[in-house]
View 1: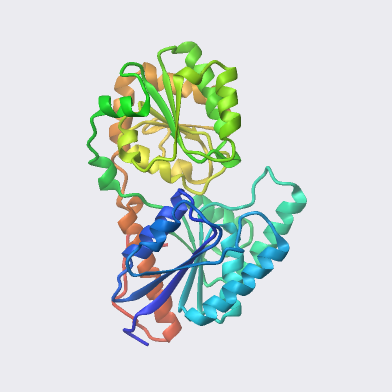
View 2: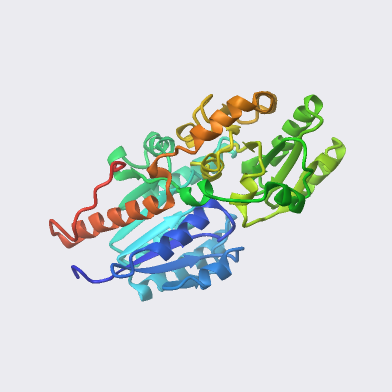
Length: 400
């Protein structure tokens, strides 16, 4: 077994256009093929399914009964299907992402006798906005599956310590591996800003305040609309850009019309040219109510764009308040607007914040993220084999 190619199977609920999904696809397509066989299992159909199917060297499977909402009978069918599939695939490692796949995938891996079970915490499915009974039930389930989990990865120190506080694991069972982005691609992006703004429906003059996020309750897009109203009152020349889509698009459009902001706001839907779009922004805003580590913060900072966002989970580990942007409490729309207006009114400070943001350390690079995961895989496989050295040990200045 030592030196043989080991099968690593990632399981995620839905391949939507999100940070966890994109990073999972990047990881699978960049694992060393001489050491690892990459397998992906996903559930209900998503925007990135075709991209996943086209990944060279990645074995792709779908279990369509695995869906995001709680559906007890359907969830049971998904658990049985996952277990049978894993018994066929016989992976050495199962690595799960997202709440539903995290529970069903880890249970299935345990039932299938998979020796190494890993879960990445991109953010907890437990939120203060849930009914207490639901929250307690979800926490109980998380504690059950934690007992069959070999190793946890967290995308932020905040998530790691939240897991410790929730009594899911001791600190030494969880490594912090950042949800990285291609820093070089964002730092080196070149774009004709005037032409890009025209393509996006923006005017050539007037600052642009933008957000890139799914239109769902977690991201609170209506808070962006309310913030935009306050900014518009003080800066009628400001333009607003919303990139994304989702279940709340209709209510966002209604709110923009009611507040007289439709002509000042562009809704682009989903876009794949994020590095170019970032170059058109004067301020990047994120109104999330909860997160693990907002990957889009990294994209904005690497692009040299000041960030004004909410102080959720790992946000403070990326955005340095007053140095690369400003953080406010979730839901505090007035504070968001005040910080945006401050950045727009102080262009020299904004430029300095942009330069500071581009100096993100290597731990936030997506290639380092893959290398760290490979190191963890090697270490766990070495332990499984009962040998002192499975391969040359990986060393990283970010090891936990």
